[in-house]
Length: 553
Image 1 (cartoon, rainbow, N blue to C red):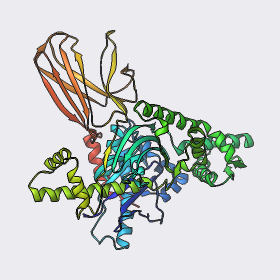
Image 2 (spheres, one colour; image 1 turned 90 degrees about the vertical axis):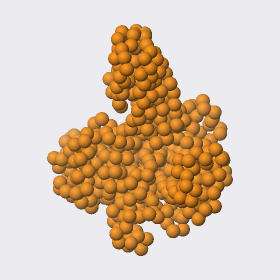
Image 3 (cartoon, rainbow, N blue to C red; image 1 turned 120 degrees about the vertical axis):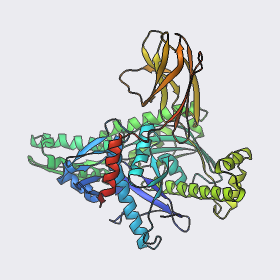
């Protein structure tokens, strides 16, 4: 097992990659078995005990669509997260675990081949990134995927934060306000952060976890399918082989139009052939609505940032992250509408590199705290509390220590990406969600609210907790389902109208703390809640066994 190396993983919707800090302190993205730095996030089930991940799996979309899955990240943490491949049902975390196993296997092989690792050593300690706009369900699903892959997941950090670290904004002497525009293959994030040396404070975040380069591909696919029908009088969607081939081609054409002004497109179907010269201008017209969606979300984030004391004129830099941000229309829109020239640098690898830098920093600091604990006889918790009281004296000592090698302790303050509340009856006897922790509140976040019993002689109550994207104090329950329901039992029966105070607190680790007290008999409840066990016990046992026994190529 490796003690000196930790790794950063960008688990992407369309492509993934893994990085580490080399002996010179430089973040390096490791190559896969094909010699590429990024691996397609595509899984093909060859048999019950063998899966193929990466470019070969991507090619199989054309010939074996019933055995192949892509864009699984869009199902992470969702209620309907299952896919059936070759007659076998898998959860999204399990499919993601196979992608992680492929990344780790190839990284391990390269490090052994180059002499960085010895036979018997393995990649195990990792930090995995996720979109800033992911909620608790999605984040825990990401962690579960890492655990199913046999990894020790040190942390889940936001992709925009990792990108900012990679670009060198964090740790420099400059005090900057940075906006990260992260347009990936399947998700879109905008994050405004204040960076002062090693302190990274997220001001606000927003986005859409169902918007990304995949949607640009599908728009182009719809256009080509329509043009094919006009030319040949036949519906191309009825030709599965042609459709599967087209999925691969549209991505190639999109990438070509990023570098060139025009591209020749060609489609072969059972009803004939279609050819056309497609210009970048026409492509941008076709996808204008998608770009406008990113602009609307960007405007919303800028409005929220201004309300929190960070108007647009305070933003020093806009960083473009994610492969889809390469499209010229993105930079053109930002320059025209916001009068800032965005920085596009290493969009495919920046997130993994930033995660690797963060992972190394956290590992060094953790090792340093253990050393100090052994020297002083104090617990790590006591040392951490002492560090806060002394204004970071321990952090300064870390920077001068052998284990720190001049490193600076990074302090990252995040915000809630979602809103959390409890359902209760209003004055009209309607069930509504009473929001308590609001999206973009600073973490850790705590709030308390009073509720009252609705019946005489109540022996307890339920506290259904909801996660939404609403910024309203209350909203109709509708068909929303709680992420969990806390059952509170009273010591004795209480009369109608008894006050119950409820406190919700969300810590930096994404753990929700719930405390409640009824003020008549003073019954109390205190519990913590995480979503690390979203699967049923049987599902988890099956997934653990399968991922351990399945060969990944």
